[in-house]
Amino acid sequence: MKTILYEILGALVLYGLVFAAIWILRYSVDPFLLGTGLVADESSVNNQLSNLIDTFQLYASIVLGVSLVCFFLWYLLGSVVIRATAPSSTWIIVWFLFVVVILAAAGVVTFYSQLKMDEITADYQQGYVAGFYFLFGFLLYYLASVFFSPLHARYRIWPARHVRR
Image 1: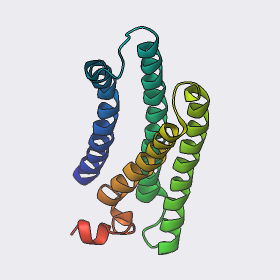
Image 2 (image 1 turned 90 degrees about the vertical axis):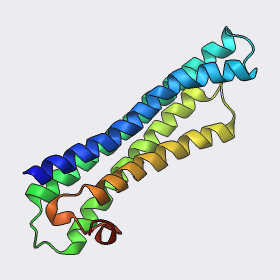
Image 3 (image 1 turned 90 degrees about the horizontal axis):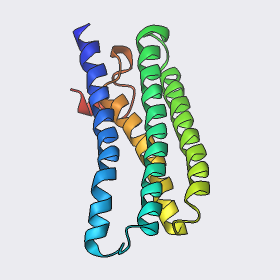
Image 4 (image 1 turned 60 degrees about the vertical axis):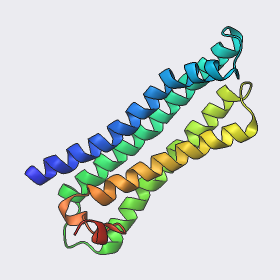
């Protein structure tokens, strides 16, 4: 029971740190841009920048929330539903199904964020934002499942066998 609590708390701390970093972004980007002179006017450009950051925070939180839910479902399935004697392919298929869900959520969020950011940002900036959604949604799920998987799924994801010795 103690191990389960530590693993769930560890995953929550991992996701919490990323959520906090995204929300801290709101209060660090505006003063930085105003101080560099890139944004000289605090009215319309700053308002657009504020809307852009708010949109990014909202959609990044949605992708990371879907990733967190997928990790908890992975943990639940690994602890309760899937038997310890299940073939390795069963574990990998379930894990990859959750990856597909996360990437689909990132794709939907990218589509909707492109609609909102279209008039504010350039195409290459939208690519960076889309890359963030895909990369961090997947990366957090991957790290959480490597370091904090349930007992029977502990060594199923590469390189958990080497990391969790």
